Image 1 (spheres, helix red, strand yellow):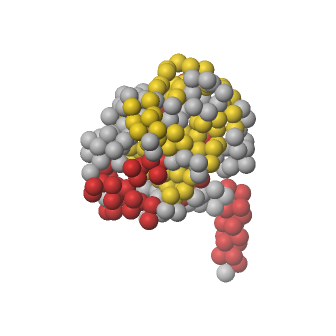
Image 2 (cartoon, one colour):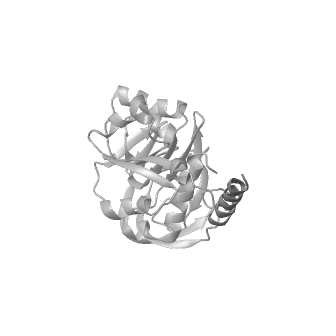
Image 3 (cartoon, helix red, strand yellow):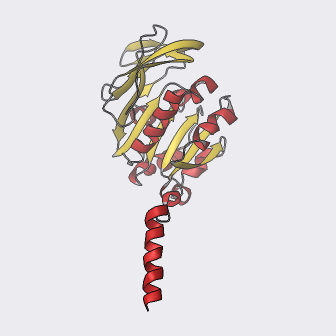
Length: 247
């Protein structure tokens, strides 16, 4: 009996010294990363998530990516990461998309995905912004010119809300990336990152909620200059945690 007690005590001491068996793997945030319809540096982009110890992920590419939003597949992820540029979305896929929020999924929208699904008005409400792809678009009687992009710019990044969990610990930095100019941001979108680059819209990232879901859009992220930048990586990692309600 004394031997059993001694072994049990030894086991407790070992656990205290080494740490209890971790369940971190089961607690990882499960991502579904949707890409396609636009060229990008695939390996460098995915390495951004491979190097994040908080997540596991599945990467899917159009044209069949939207089938993953159906309820039977959606149970396998916690956060949808949009990195696609698809222009068409069926009514069925729209319904599947909206059902994600009822199921408590988070949404992180990256870079050129701001210009996806231009003919689906609800996407603009989800995103909290709109990028104009046509030379002339009339919005509430106002003519909007085509938004424009320019690669290889040096973008000063200002932390607009240092208290938000997505920006925690970040200081102002500079990034070589692609500028976007001439897109709209909804008044109820909460700005997280801004810039003074005159070839870019003042906004770079914002957070919002839609049907109770947490959403973040990040304009930055054209290529490896962003994917490998520690500030960019930190923001993306913390944004994922926030939309997944881990912060």
